[in-house]
Image (cartoon, rainbow, N blue to C red; front, side):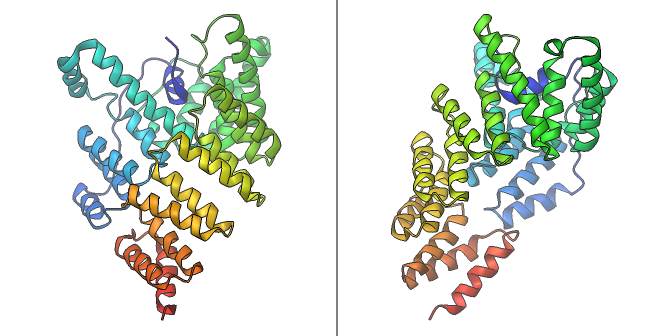
Length: 380
């Protein structure tokens, strides 16, 4: 069966045995619960509460809190990654699923969790992997590979890179480069990317991309840890971070030619165009992203912000109002509605938006809170 997405490849390459460990959270559950209640529209507070529940093996409660986080911020990559693995070692959960629908329902449910994991890497190919460090122990490979993987999921990227670099050089010294294991190359590139060494990462992923294409053409994808298009998307992100905008855009367009559902390719191209103030092209990509994933209100928010930055404040208000109607829990939309309303001299609308934003905003939005208060004092 073809492995789906980057996280599934990560788990598959980690070796055997893979033993469950406990998530460790130092704060008391009652404190985390109170914080999530008082900042009920703070996705991070719900995520932290989920980690607290997870540490107590309250997996259903953890899942609920993670879904709350995603409902507030649909582009919260960390929450998607955690959601994709929260039930991995929850034996009671899988027994319940089996009783409800047998092996067929288990397969369907497993695909759902795989989808969440893949979504995390779609949103952010360099998503923080520390949540994996709390749930896995690895064995079965060389000491450098195992230590590198341990460091990688602990967020110790410099140490991870050193281990994978040594493992890669060892393999290259004993066999042709085409025979070096995908896992070593992939994690070498991933740790390099986390250190902002995007040129090294691009070389590694380019090698894997070429290898995957050859295997796809000659046989099947059964033993390829990622889909060819996943590699292509990762390469596009790395080219973007290297500042090679034309190369990145070309790759993103190829990603979409192979899978129109990869809406984040539109988002990434919009960011590139906006960075060079090509607002016409940025807006077009934002609109395509909304059309590809209309259930994600944050894409409407992004479109509204880009329209505002281009000076099209009336159109920005339309998009922002749609976003607020679709997801009223995301208070960021109210901040931008107030900002656009001021530009349109709609003082009552601005006052209402900023007032509601201040009533909802999580405490960690201290900068936006200060701006909203200042703008309210300046309104007649």
